[in-house]
Length: 158
Image (cartoon, rainbow, N blue to C red):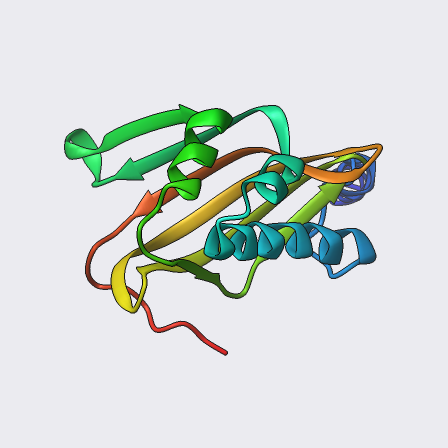
């Protein structure tokens, strides 16, 4: 009897927890990844119209460079981001791999390692963290946060 009550309590708690969004592949997760990949294509081709259609109008982009007290955090809005892409002198090439996507209804996140190049020149790597909301026109980016690392970058996997 001593062991019965704790076992029932543990089983009840295990079964009574709300379901968390999972990182399992799904059609919604595939759509989220495609939206992020469309962003990279629009950046590479400097397609500012496509860029605007991929984002929610109030989206924010945040970069975190460095660690600890030395970290530099910079934030910009969509208009400034689009302008910087449209006026870039070099081809902007960003690649991500092994994205982890979580979807709960009309909210999704994507977390993935990435690297970034100006033309053929490596610039930096890090992790992208995207937030998406599904609207009438599909998934829209509401925020992107990313880390900036200049060395010690992993080799991307195919």
